[in-house]
Every structure is written in C-alpha cells, then in structure tokens.
Length: 200
Image 1: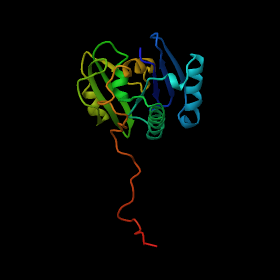
Image 2 (image 1 turned 30 degrees about the vertical axis):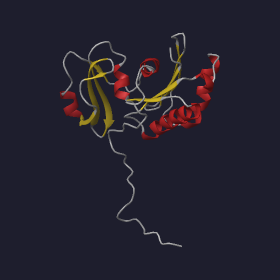
Image 3 (image 1 turned 120 degrees about the horizontal axis):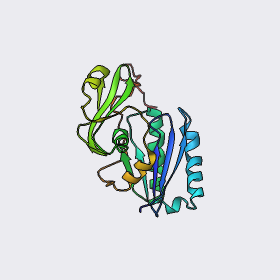
Image 4 (image 1 turned 90 degrees about the vertical axis):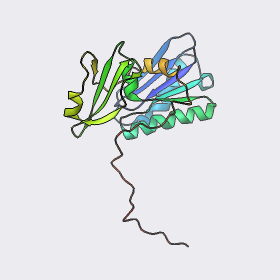
C-alpha cells in the first residue's frame, strides 16, 4: 500500500486519514467550524507519531477540494500542497461530492444544502463513478431531480478513511489539488472603483 495522508477541511470538521503500508487506516476527527489552521499540523503530527512514522515516510497526500467552506478548503489545500512540495511526493485532489459517494456501494444522489435555497447536486452510478457533473441548483429543482432508486446523501461529512484509500489509487496528473467551489466567492475584487496607482 502507498502510505497516504488524507485531509478534509471542506465541512465543519478537521478530518485526517492515514493509510498505512499494511492496509490499515487510522483517522483523526475534530468537530470544528473554524480554527482548522491552528489545529491541522498538530493533529497531523499526532496521527503520524501514534503510528510510528514521520513526514519522511509519506508517499502521497490527498485532499478534498470542495464544494464547501472557502476558508476551510484553502487551509486543507495549502497544507496538502505544502507537505507534498516539501517531501517531493504526489498530491491528489478529490471532489467532496465524489468523496461522499464512496460511502455507498450502489448508485447514489448527493444533495447538499448550499444555503440561499440552493443545493450542490450530483448523481453517481456507483462509488466514485459520476453519472452527472457536480452542479449548483435551486433547492426545489435539485429535490425534483433526485434519481429514484439511488441512495440520497445529504450529510457533508466524508468518510476520511475511504478518501485515503481512494486517493491512493488516483492519477495525480488528472486529479489536481484545485478548489472545486462550484459557487463563486462572495467577495469580488474591486475593478470599476479601483484607485489608479501612480508611479513613484
């Protein structure tokens, strides 16, 4: 097995999973809506230490890419990229919607409350097998689009152990660690009202 560290900060949890060479997975979960940045490296150190390994033993990092909390996603993505860069190992990005589908053996429909009476929506033919692209839909339309016979997934919390196992099999070249916000950020850079900079 490829020793893989999995990171999920897209939802109000800090979740870490460690896939070990013998196939075991150890996890660390903190229920936190904010404060991921203050906790993440301490929790990674604890997870590695209790399994008798260090950063030098890691062979891959996988992180969820959203949709989810803008701030949380940036923290997870930055941590994953930083560890991979420092170690010279592959880093893989996994859509949170795809990650959620891993918990079901058969077809599933992921419908997550995105607030503003909207939903993140995606249909899967099986675990990790998208049948449609991830989308942001009005809640009523998303509810009407639930595919009969599929398992409905409405919790935003992934199984981080499954993320570690699945991420260990993915091709880094086709699964980059890029944010999958789906919805644009609320904060927009100023353009029309921007003050022109003058040369010194």
